Length: 342
Image (cartoon, rainbow, N blue to C red; front, side, top):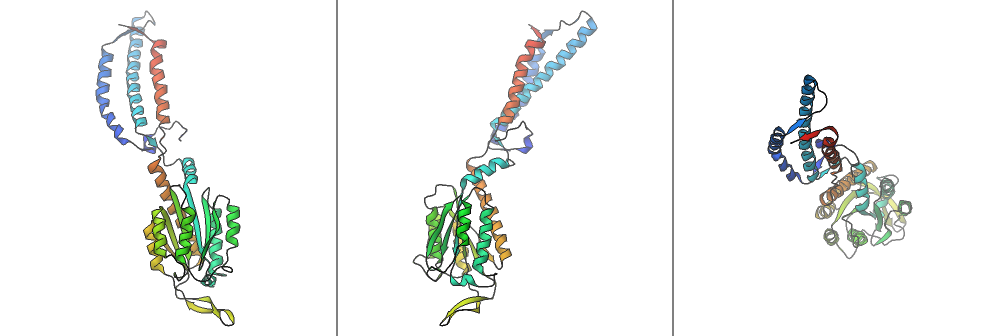
């Protein structure tokens, strides 16, 4: 809430601007107030000097007309208060609301191809570094971690304990998980972590470098589940264009050979579009950092729009405070300064 005395009208937005129609009554109100003033008689027992008395009466008349303008100002202030003023510059209030609402899950592909060396030292290591930096930059969001390859598991449920989350991200590996790339299963597992969350803003960041070739749930079906639960999915395809030095399983173990980079961008775009998210392509680590920054801005903007659409931070108190002070002054000054005569 705005805890100041600022009533400069152009620094506010208004929830109920229809109340400003009352200002059309201002000329009529002013007419009756001035007409009433002209019918009143008043005297000033200041001095017996006729000239001094005349000057005093002129001053009093001017002062009383000024009081009329103050009454019109009070009316205006009350109208502005009724219009529900709020400020988009209230960063503290934004931050509080922002902290209340975003739950997010990172779904990271750890299949064999994520060890390709077009990112240094590998795609997976780069994805982990960027994810950890992203988590460190958050302020109050609950974030979880899902790891998937041919199957998926929850490495860390959504939490505010970023130290534990970052530790889990650092340990991410495809060493003890079934091979393959089950994008649908990875996304479905991430959705399940947010299923019972009642918060209004929920998002998943899904990272992969391949195509769906495993699992018993399709990416399309997982996207439908996310959409039904109002979960936005941001998909990131990781890998350079063309070929990359990639691990290949041979009878003699794992060897690195130049292999074509195959990312099912069509499916990733469909997932993002269906859930209200967005698809990004990261061809290097710098692009991956940039993508996370874009997602942060997009998600924050979407959530703040929800907050202000549903629970705008209206604060008429500056207008009401000034109106109250002026009402007190207008009410008290006759008792102190003037003596009315009918």
